[in-house]
Image (cartoon, rainbow, N blue to C red; front, side, top):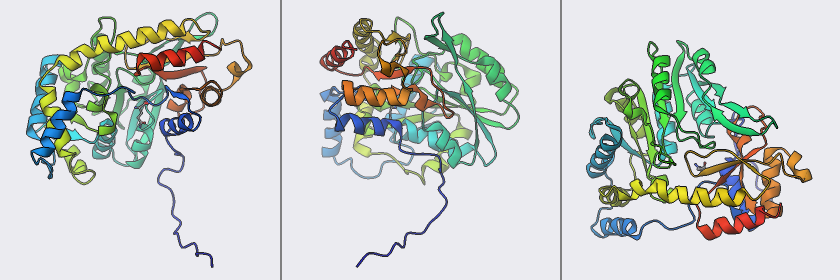
Length: 399
Ligand code: GLN
């Protein structure tokens, strides 16, 4: 006897959304035993001291619901950290909320302030959660594209902020602008002058800002991260999003935070409490005690710069053309000059081929655009042990 199909049919809330490219590429990498430089996560362990701190909290019976907004010790630590790095004081009670990772913080901020019909401006290539989150809120996504700079041979050399396009995109219906620096996937980093220019752009508007700064501790060559928190006018209208997963090599813990002025935080928490309510207690205690020592995140730029430089110097021995990587743990590379037929494939097909036939997984930059956009550029994650990068390079150098 066959089971009758009684599943009700209903219109999809996200009809154009499939499975996120990061999950798809990680599954393909696992299926083909490829070295996974696709989805962004470290393949090395976090500090044992951090694990011990979480373990201590569990053994100390810190295992029941924490406050809805997160434990005070962690919010205080975040407030001090932001003050010392970016000079802005966020009140831990009224302005900081612990979230289940950066992505939840972004979705919750969007649901909290975007009403049906509101416009939300994003800058593509954009992290793939932004657009569906806006859609769930009933908002209308207005995408502008980073300007792609090319050399005389047509190869991509860098990306620049599209100021003119941004200026024309922002109008009285623009509820929100989402920015992301250091930028996934291009590694582009905003400068002080960029924040100033942005502040001028939104000055006489009611546009709020979601500033995705989850890679804040990954900026290289002596540069510093410029947070919206460092610009008082921007801080006054921004949700600042960050993530412990990226900073402490624990992407699977899914803990992040959102700092925003009281009025924004008040609305944020109305949604947050009925979304996740709150976040894993012992992990919050563990992070709070670990955060007190700034040395880990202060050393992170040097730690990742060494990996970036190692990976780049190996890639330079291949026909890939490297894009600059001033920030993040992603290296973008233009494959269109490879002297093989596959150089003509589109980015998604090239990544599939690279994963299944060469044994190295990467992410197509086209996945960060809504409309079909091909620039012959793919993204590698270099948050890996040197031996992993060396093994991947060996395979890539055979191309
Ligand atoms: N942020 C990570 C990346 O860009 C992926 C996170 C995820 O898989 N959802 O690779």
